[in-house]
Length: 173
Image 1 (tube, rainbow, N blue to C red):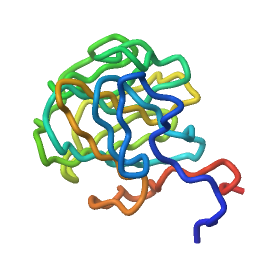
Image 2 (tube, rainbow, N blue to C red; image 1 turned 120 degrees about the vertical axis):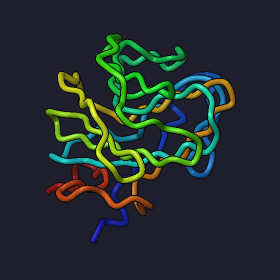
Image 3 (cartoon, one colour; image 1 turned 90 degrees about the vertical axis):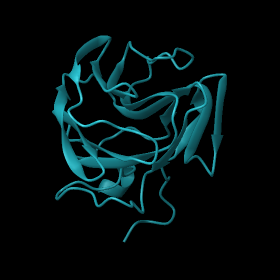
Image 4 (tube, one colour; image 1 turned 90 degrees about the horizontal axis):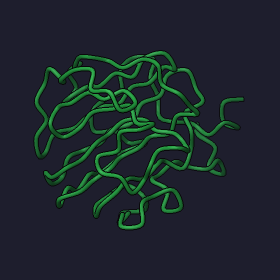
């Protein structure tokens, strides 16, 4: 059972772009810019989920303390996917996601400190990303009316076997 006193993860208003709006207790992002999660990923296999509530410009994946939070799209120190299907590894587009993503879809983000993988509506999507420089935090950016909801627990799409919600470091002991 999770420790009720352990810090919980959510989108961090202190680590967000100046024109970002974070709602629903840190689980919805809109406006313009990016936000990091409040906790880095320290466990072996971590999972979080995002739901595209409203289309626009957006990106989902991992960033670090150097990620530019006012830039859209975030490119430097960003490893993830964009609304147009681009798969990005630190400024380099390495391919296109093999599954289209549209309004209403759920994206699962899976990270095991070697590889960043994605699911679209519960199905694995390719390609995956390697070479992430950390400490790695969840990052989401939005623009052009995009609204993204993030679930760090109580997922609507089941996490893959072996993956779990992002845990605070002291809860790993």
